[in-house]
Length: 317
Ligand SMILES: [Zn+2]
Image 1: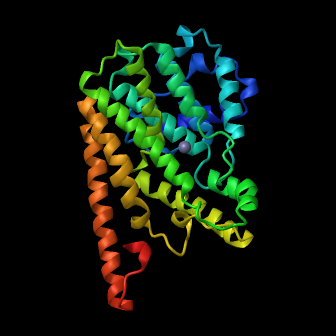
Image 2: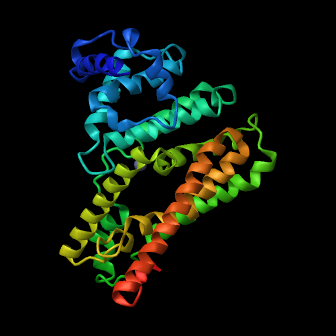
Image 3: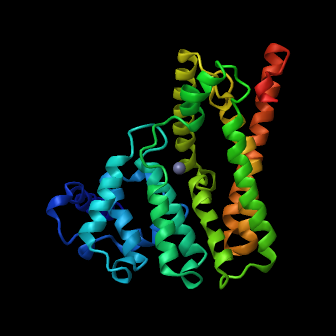
């Protein structure tokens, strides 16, 4: 694996200064071992640099046969991906590596669920490219901050009943999609376009599925996410805006940040998906185990706090 990686690395650097390599895609020299590894949800993004990641993204388009099917010029794809790379900001979480991770999970799910035999290539192209683009130019601040800072802060004079509003809306939308998926599941039919369209749920799943990855991959991502959250809440405090509670460094712990999210969002999604694709049972079990670990860690923390302070802080309840 080591030799292979070095080989790709050299190639990736050429890709990085992309203007000079015209036949990159047609001569992608990525080993079969790496190509297969790239198709798995256990893929470890932390081993690869951005230049290498650019090459791996091209491998995805190549190995899904998008290049001949849609007559894509390799240089065009390469320039498109380079432009994408440029438009992701250098922020802790929503950066180019996150874009790659989401795309790679989408790619892995396409192979794992054998989606190629069930859906048209154009749908898969749309899903993969949506994953590539999904957080373009993310500033590292969520909508709550943007809106608070502008309209709402002015309109409501910073009174904060709306602080959880955006979060609540996001959960509501997710719940609606999940419920629709659940209701159609017993009669799910890949020949029905409306049913096939529901597969876009896989983009969302890919976006939030770090916890379905191996611990050594998922843990650093959680650190990055909390760092980005804390950056926002620090600025909110400085600017006197309502602080988004789940982003507050004084209130959030790693297990407390994950327990609710895994139990109420991620696990239900994987449970339903595994009903449709039994091959996803492995990922579901991984998420289930993570949920158990986080819950018991949170309980231990609560006990510890009670022991030392005689009470349990509200955010740990
Ligand atoms: Zn994202």
